[in-house]
Amino acid sequence: MYQKLQLVFNQQLNRLYLPVLLTILDTFGTASIFGSVYYVLLHLIEGQFTSGTLKTTMFILGIGYVIRLLAVGFSQYLFQIRGAMLIRDARLNISNHLKELPLGYFSKESIGTIINTCTVDMTQAERVITHLIGDMLKVTFVTGYILIVSFLVEPKLALIQLILVMLSLPLIVWIGKLGEKGGLQKKVVVSDVLARVMEYIDGIRIFRSYNQTGMAFGRLNESFKRYRDESIHLEVKLVPLNFIFFIIIDFIVPIIFIAGSYMLLAGEIQMEAMVIFIIISLGVSTLFRPFSVLYTEYKVLSVTINHIVSLYEMDTAPYTKETADFPHYEIEFDHVQFAYEKGQPVLRDMSFAMLPNTMTALIGSSGSGKSTILNVLARFWDIDDGAIRIGGQNIQEIKPDALLEQMSIMFQNVYVLNDTILQNIIIGKPNATREEVEQACRRANCHDFIMKLEHGYDTVVGEGGSTLSGGEKQRISLARAFLKDAPIILLDEATASLDPYNEMGITEAVDELVEGKTVVVIAHKLNTIQHADQILLLENGTIRERGTHEELIALNDRYASMYHEQLEAKGWRLQV
Ligand SMILES: Nc1ncnc2c1ncn2[C@@H]1O[C@H](COP(=O)(O)OP(=O)(O)OP(=O)(O)O)[C@@H](O)[C@H]1O
Ligand SMILES: [Mg+2]
Image (tube, rainbow, N blue to C red; front, side, top):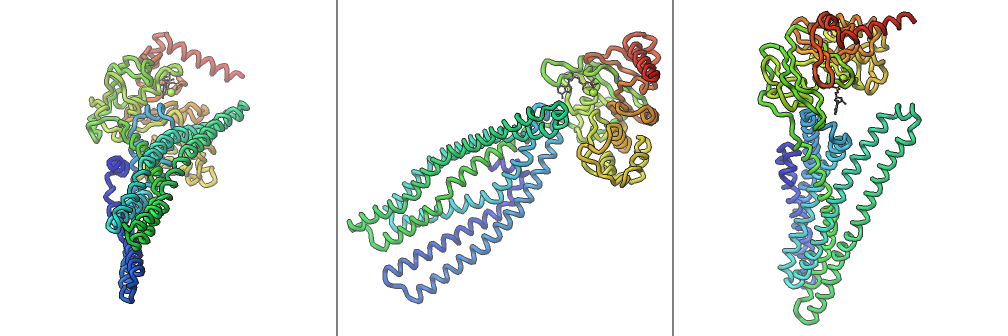
């Protein structure tokens, strides 16, 4: 557990040593209070309670209280403050780790599991360090002291008391195991609930348009019901066991009373020992009572810690070079094979080169593998066979972050953050000046429409860019890519949602970009890529045709017929 906690909290657990030490000190304070009660009782029973005894008791109590006051105060303060800092760092740590995981992980794993780990699990882990460690230490130490001291008072009764405590231990272990198992099942259900909620919110527009909100809500409701059943199931299993545990613990006092009485009558123990022991056994049963609940909580939370650890143990993309120093920016695909799912190849033995200062256009029918080429080039996924090189260096050797620094990417599915337009664009280059942002926006044909918005660049756009049109989002995303101004530019369907006027402006801007860069564009509209230095026509994960526009027209095959079809479609539209 310690190793796992160290992993989750970035080897920083030593920041908890001081509050742990203070908690142990606090247990001495608590023990001193019991000690003074013992001292007073002893003197009262022996009829020797004098003002001297009172002073000594007051002195012991005073010291005990001061120790407790300082130790409790500081330990709780430190557990809270340092715990919060550890959790903050752990959250940052896990986000960094998520960033480095291959995208394949996110498609395979339920998104609910990831959200669960980053939110619920982390909050529970925070509880472990801010409360649980301290509480468990207190209960264990104080009960331990009293059990030991009770042997000094009366060994036989102490043994009976110890046996009763020991009897409860297997029960605690059993309760803990059930708690752990239930916790595990509950985690699966919680992840499912989160995934369903996401699905419901994400798809609400589609569900509504097909009048299927009932069906979607049904799935969500099912998931909530499973969560409710699982929670009840766990409680129902734990309640009787906890009940038996409480009975054993509550029996300590009466059993000690009965056994003590017999021993007293038989003359085996003194009256003082009997009275004191009843007080001691009251202390043990009260102090030890919360242990089963705390231990169950510890076991349930250990599931949480394991959960977080398993996310850490996911392999990140390997690399040997921290930085990317490419002598030039020629991109080379050398017999590349790739499949998202085993046995379903998406790129088949693909070889081509994209030269610096040129633009390559990828075209082909939907699903032919165009976006996949960009995905593997950016190392969002690693290829299965062959090699991808930039400037002669295999990209598998380079740290993904460093590789991405060399690329400006515009994705097919544009994502806009719930923030101002300025913040949305400046992601591309966080230290950019406002002038640079505006310049990028002019090139991406979005400056004018942004200036017409109520607060211009400071207008806040809704989550996912819900207040912007498809074309506006696309141009914002393009401005982001322009602003980054990296040596490699990858644009996936940059003009898909644009009207002819904007399309022309963007096409010209992209044509200009080629100077000093390697540009890859994916396009469905063939008129936007006619000036490309190279056109690759993909079909089913292979390159079916390659060449310039003129060469492919002359070839008079697939590209030529696609081009003519699009021309005719345009003509038809113009005639209407
Ligand atoms: N994350 C993924 N997991 C599994 N399969 C995927 C994933 N992304 C794409 N695919 C599959 O890989 C194939 C190629 O997809 P890709 O996105 O590269 O096509 P595309 O040429 O960009 O198509 P489009 O023009 O529609 O954007 C498709 O069959 C698709 O279903
Ligand atoms: Mg695509």
